Image (cartoon, rainbow, N blue to C red):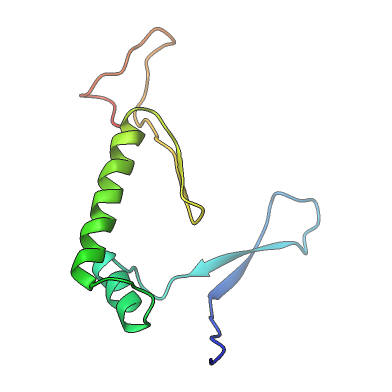
Length: 106
């Protein structure tokens, strides 16, 4: 079996989080954003799918729908590949202010 080498492009940016002016952090430069179809096509192409592209896509979409449902109940999700945590956007006027669909979103 051939060895597969992966490449990730990145740039180094000076960090302000340390006192050393010679410290940098890496920022990944994405080739492009892939969607569910792209990933399913790639899995089938590489032989990494035990099913059809269409069935894989349906299962992925069902997984994400269930993940969304759990997030809306306040759960965080850790798939082992990425973590997702609900986030409330908007400004609260004071500590007694409540969630308002007109000013806040989840």
